[in-house]
Image 1 (tube, helix red, strand yellow):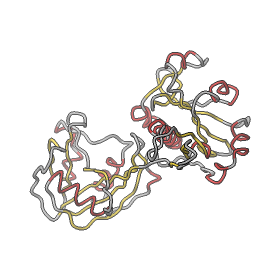
Image 2 (image 1 turned 30 degrees about the horizontal axis):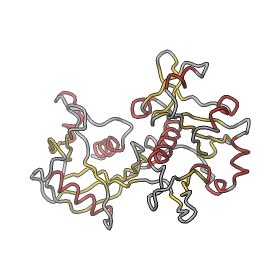
Image 3 (image 1 turned 45 degrees about the vertical axis):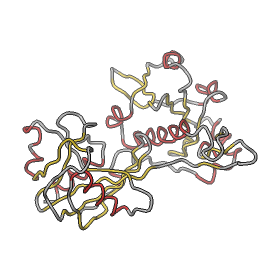
Image 4 (image 1 turned 135 degrees about the vertical axis):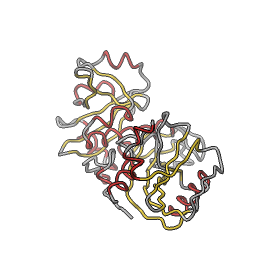
Length: 307
């Protein structure tokens, strides 16, 4: 089956050196933070801040001098180096959005990355996704899961440490692995319509990996649970960071052993087998494929081209 490069996908090509060893060195982080080269991207309630130019969303970052007043009172993290530039993220979720917007001379606005991301260059979209995923984790892990005490950020924002001296547990950023798969049978592939999707949109099936389960078995289980199809051979294709909110999408192609569709649960509203010609003329049928920034779309397009 087809395999393609993960770096061809949106949110997967940040071009950054994350400088993981530097995170434990507070002096290095402080020096990078106050550097004339340092740049800061801003988030609020998991939305990225963009500059508006003629109504279009463009990436924007700020210098230390522009952002310094926020750093003592709001969470921030070191993302790494991008072309010799230290890159940081600051989360201003505790402030009213209008207060934030009024604090900058540029015309800026917060926007969901799912809407604005596909319009950006891939490196910039990937950096925004990285920032979004990391700060979402911080928002959801303010307290220790072992003892309930507050946690604090350490290691440049890549660890949360329990403040209870009798516990002191370190917590690390969480990523939830999910399988996403295009199931094929001859010249047809299986796509489903979920209630969460826009009207007329059909996409690949997907689901989270369960404890003690291989990725391949997760593919087979999810497809059977959602569409009643038995899957045999499973082949890896690519993976994509998907911080909406915390997933890593692991893409596969699978070969169906059966073709009769039945709904074992309420995950899907509909599922159908489509030929390559069907997909090339999807719009004429009142249907549409998933967005171009998703690995789901890439799985489908690579399969169409492989004929």
